[in-house]
Image (cartoon, rainbow, N blue to C red):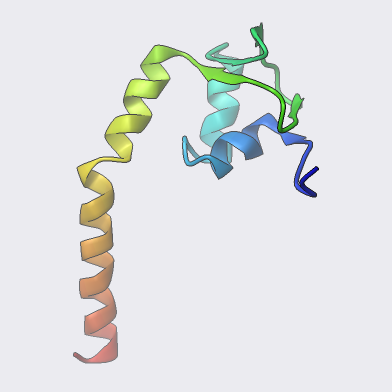
Length: 87
């Protein structure tokens, strides 16, 4: 078993790049997250064997976040680093 498990559901969602921990808290409070078919509540812990499900509306939102915006942020960060480095 991995040393990181069990972990709180909000940390799990964050580690899977769905959202930040605080955003995860909001999704959990809204009832949009399920663990093994049961609606998650704040403080629930998940293990490697658990099945975590997100509402379809959350999946659509996260797929958009992982699309072109992520590439733009990386490009922007490279330009900022070059300015800092004097390049």
